[in-house]
Image (cartoon, rainbow, N blue to C red; front, top):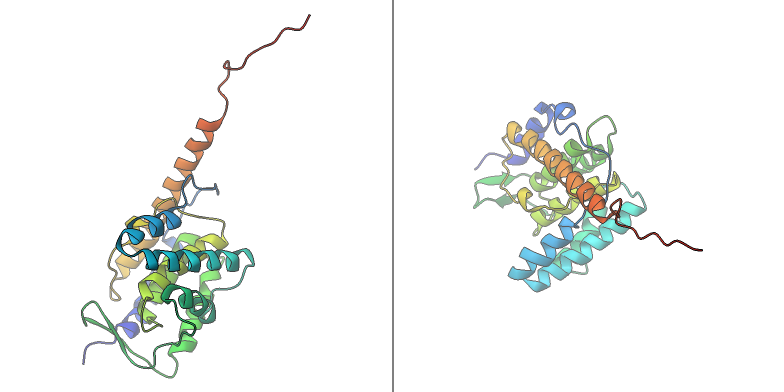
Amino acid sequence: MTTDSLAVWCRVRGEVDWASAGTGCPALLAPAVDGLTAWFDGPVRDRCPERADRLLDASALARVDAAHRRPLAPALLAGWQRLVLGRSEITFRDGDAFAKGGRERYGLTPATWKDFACCLHQSADPALPVAARAARAYLDVAFFHPFPDGNARSALLALAYVLDLDGIRLDQVAPLQTTRFADDPAGAADLADLLTVLIRASHRRAAAAMLSERPQEGTGTTTILG
């Protein structure tokens, strides 16, 4: 039997210096472009319009949940996943799961879902940088692999949710579409650093857009009354 990649991830998760990963995020600015919506409405829609519509619906629900400050939890993910998959009911997997052509196996024990809930709860830890928390939540969903289908989509929604709770939205998400491995602590930290880069870039472009919209000095018209 292949190695239990979930058990590996739980060990690796504790080895990463999350407090030092993904530091230095700038002050908040609304992005010039809603990157998550643009991703769903662009590349995803090009492949499958129905999938894009379902993801947009799930993203809209997640943003309502964020506005209500609901903590990230398995039940919250399941609510989004019903929309992602277009199903009235969603259950958590009841056996081992496999990904990457069977190269990674995610085991299931009596403690799995309790551990998963605990990991998701930690995404709100204010002692860690938001980029680190969002990256870790993404990887938690990916490697706990809670659903029979659509776990990569669920992971992306979880990442966006953690950012949204801190008032952050990216203007692009395409760079996040990279395969991640459970046994790679450096890769986990790199994901947090990548998120920081994307947040900074979104901030920079938003600031530039705001400046371009301001009236330039000397361009107004003066009217003399007399």
